[in-house]
Image (cartoon, rainbow, N blue to C red; front, side):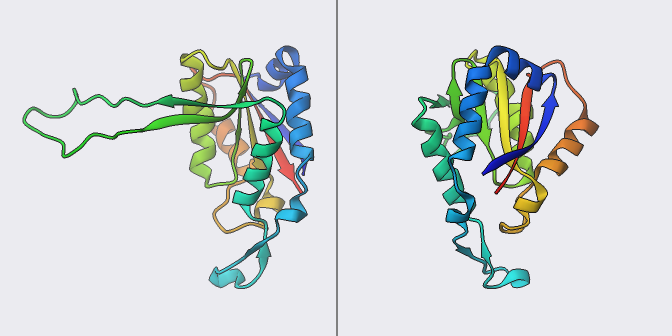
Length: 189
């Protein structure tokens, strides 16, 4: 796969290039190491494209994970301990969440990387919530989000979001004082 687009959210491009040029090189190499055509293995069951061969996001995600892990990147998982102090007096929950956690795809030094081939809401969550949480916990100070461009997403199941839509929404949203610098990378096959 190849990187074909970049968007600098909250100064992300400058922050990544100045603090982590060596890690940006590893991200580029990790993406380039995955041959997208090897992952065109999903036969569509959707009515609008029945039987059409599509790129398999799970398979591509697995290949990217292998590529990052061989370069020493690590997954970072933190437990989510949910408070019960906000329940209305007298309410007794049947059970509390056990084993809940939040996980960042890849972390090295203080750079966090998320790869997203899923629904739009996950892209926004990664940049506007998860990365700020991991920053507050002092695991990262800068992020990279890797997402497909529209032409690539169109060759996956319906509902996979894409770079252009994501960038438009981030630009319309604006930047908040809690946002960290994030470089959004658009990839294609």
